[in-house]
Length: 209
Image (cartoon, rainbow, N blue to C red):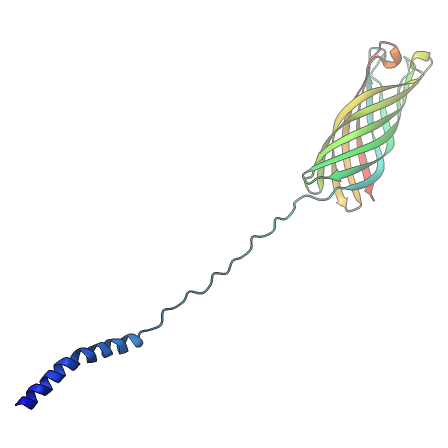
């Protein structure tokens, strides 16, 4: 009887140890915790420049039409204009700055007043917007008109100013075409007290190099 009581006591004391071992064993069989895969960071795309690079020297020719307006003239004579130009553009991104020299010969003449516009020479500043293959721009500067006449007062040259608008289209990397409209003012021409205005419109072709 005493032996039976001793075995029962031993079993009761051993039961917690067996339960703890079972719990530990069960914990050892638990599934491993999954580690999430690292998130791949995709770099942002590099911005692509939409415009073109208009920087460089260029030269070309123009052909157009012009008309004079003055109280000294009996009519508003008009005629063909033709000439050459050369300049340089610098592309700052969206803005394009430039300078240009051009000269036009003309056949504009007021026969009754005996006044002929022989040529117009211009020194230009240009401010444009880079729109890819298109370049709209404004321009202004100094112009020198050369006139010939039987009257000495108009057989001379004089300096005035001009302003206007233009646009160019890039045909390829070396060639572009465009158009330009300019308004000229020659106030008090050759100290005669006479103002002469001139409007010109021209088509242009330029070659970049």
